[in-house]
Length: 390
Ligand code: PMT
Image 1 (tube, rainbow, N blue to C red):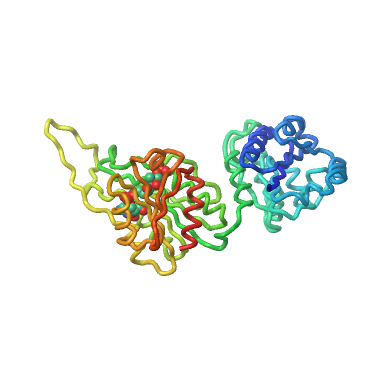
Image 2: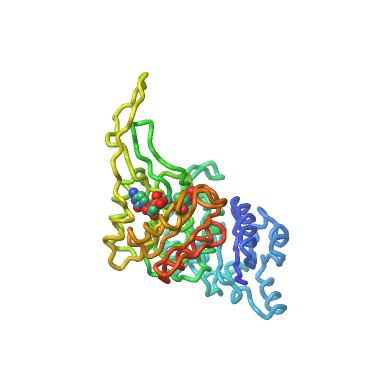
């Protein structure tokens, strides 16, 4: 079992660490908590211990006691160490090798991956001294989860809020994954496209972007440099992913072409509109008593273009079918020169648009493999692993 140390320093945001610890435990991880003395004013050690079933460390002496009992120091045991929230004070100490309490001592003794999530007043965060300390730690390989911008506890507005629990969890999970895609570049498309009729109306589909965003996160967690070209969705941009927002198929096509030459893998999970209105009215179309028709023209087939122009890239397409699924999907696999095609059936329970799960058949040159229903997150790892194999 992997061990995560969560270090907590004195910030009003410390309450978020309770959720972080709980979420990490749900991922099946062993979590050890170290608080600074002042952090215990915000959240008690007992709260963390009740969750982790371990002693919550505060004093340096705790470490010695633990060492004697378990013959192993926390520092050696850790696979990743995250300090969240990290105050300006703690960041300054860590940047300068000061080891004066359990948190700072253990941080200095650890040679595992280290992550720091700052939380402080904007002026303190932007102060060149803090920025210099952050740069220094980055130089030594420490990763940072950027603070968010918003209303701070002190009443000021600006950058300095502790990042969301989801982003903190992602940063930890990402550090723990085997980096099979390290040094690789991955391009993923997600969501629907929106084809304007007039300034008010558009043609689109039901894609939520969940599958594509899960793929982007998974690729990032496997160590890839990820570019996500996303149609309009209401999901938060994945942490550490270069996300480019587009609306129409033409815009998606342009962005995909811009990045195609430099990437090693492409996954086209976006639900791209095949047609768009020939003319986009500049003013809202007025209704009359007559019926109305809109002339549609073909959009470029982005996946087909990629299949025709690929050099080193491995390409994964998707197929959303409602009838003759395997036959139609196999045609797409060959017709668009894919290396892998993921077929999902709109009418199958737990598959396709919007939900958190998917049921798919993976089509390769060799065979077809129908997979059990699984979460879109889990499926994303299966797809990426398969794409690396084919
Ligand atoms: O976003 P979610 O709510 O999580 O739903 C996920 C999903 C159902 C959208 C996803 O799993 C999926 O099936 N995506 C592809 C949907 C689709 O457009 O299928 P298609 O069979 O029409 O297209 C085949 C392939 O060609 C797809 O890879 C598509 O991205 C691509 N294509 C299609 C049309 C076009 N003009 N250009 C393309 O590149």
